[in-house]
Image (cartoon, rainbow, N blue to C red):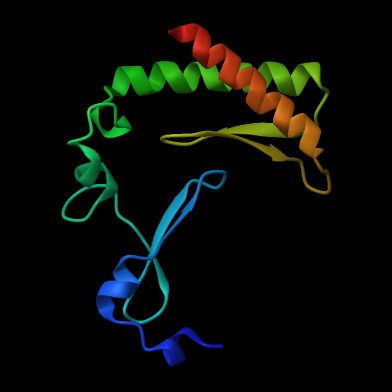
Length: 126
């Protein structure tokens, strides 16, 4: 059934948030019953809204973020080589990802292994 038929209030719509860790997105349901990106900064931005949380990434320095992403990227590249995966590493502003080459697939087990390797490298940072 259609969301509009549910006759949700604006407040109910605004409380619905969709987060995608693997794809690095954060969306909220608008009063028009469509998903809209949540901005990073300013009123209602996720960085602004989480500054009061002591360990929030919103409070990390640019240097600390760069170090973390450098370690994750290095570990992912090493995994790509060791497991002979047909893909490439993509680095975004706040994330590192592994994307298969066109027409290729990366087995779920290989993705799990890559995540575990990255996690182990990141834990050694502390």
